Image (cartoon, rainbow, N blue to C red; front, side):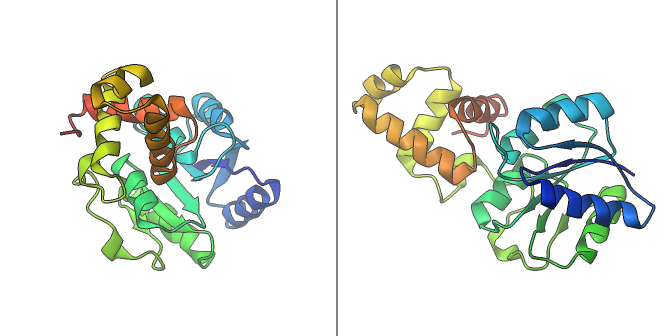
Length: 211
C-alpha cells in the first residue's frame, strides 16, 4: 500500500514512516509538512491512502481533507490527531474521512486502520467516544450543537457569497460581530483561515446541508 504522510513535525513523520515500512507491506511515497504540500504530494503520487494530522501550517488537515475529497475522491484519507473532541471528529467524518486515529493510541492501531481502509471500512480508535459521533453523512451543519443559530446564519450567507459588510447589514449587527462569529466558527470547525471557512460554507451550500 502506497502512503502519503502529512504532519508538521519531522519526528512524528519519521515515526509513522518507520511503523509503516518495517512490516514491508506499506511504502511511504510522499511526505508533507503543511496542507498545500499534502495536496501536491497526493497530486504527484496518487497514493493508496493519505495519513494526515488535523493541524497543518497554512491549511488545516480538515480543510485539506475537504479538498482531497473533491480533487481525488478515490484516495481514502485517515486522520491522525491528539484532539479527540466530538466536533472535530464529526467534521472529519462528514467530509469523508476513512478513519480517525488517536495519536496516543497503540501503534498496532495503524495497521488495523489500514486494513480497514483496504476493505472500504471506517476505522475509529477505541479511545474515541462513539457517543459523540453521528453516522457519516447523516449530520447536517445546522444540527451541530457547537454552532449557535447566529453562527449558522453567518455560515449560510458566507456560502451564498455575501461579503462581511453585506452579512452585517442583513443581520443588523456590526462588522466586528460578524468577524467574531466567523472566528469562533473556524475554531469550532477546525479550519484555519478565511478561505478555508469560505470553501467549507460553499461546499455545504452546494450540498444543501444548510437550512
